[in-house]
Image (cartoon, rainbow, N blue to C red; front, top):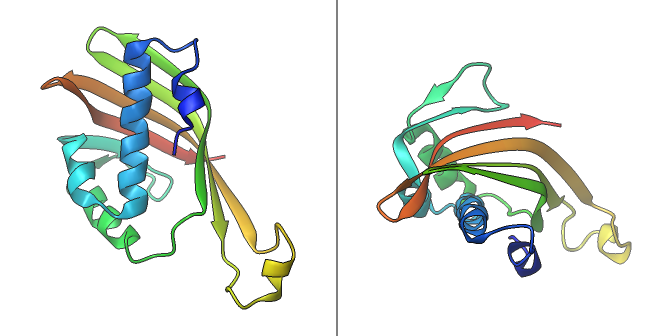
Length: 148
């Protein structure tokens, strides 16, 4: 999902690139419906504020169910991470960005496929993902997602 050029951007040091790669791995697992990978990248006591609920959600189990369901749904045609910022404080990292998700909802046999851009729709979210370094890797402990 992340462009290699973004990861090689000179403004990010090695640790910041690791955090961007962890973010990308989480988003890739979500899109693929890969609950095992998602769980391995999160702590069990994961907390979040999502656009789907006005209250804090605690525990990774809620998300594992949603990730598994994602596997049976049409996948976005692309996901872009816009304007990422990565802050590192010792063994804690914070990634903030806007996520742009492109969907193509037009059926293959529709007229939309003869008109570039027809049938496409976009969603954008502002996201914050908080990681801690554990066992030699980064694991997400909290995230906040809101629609733009």
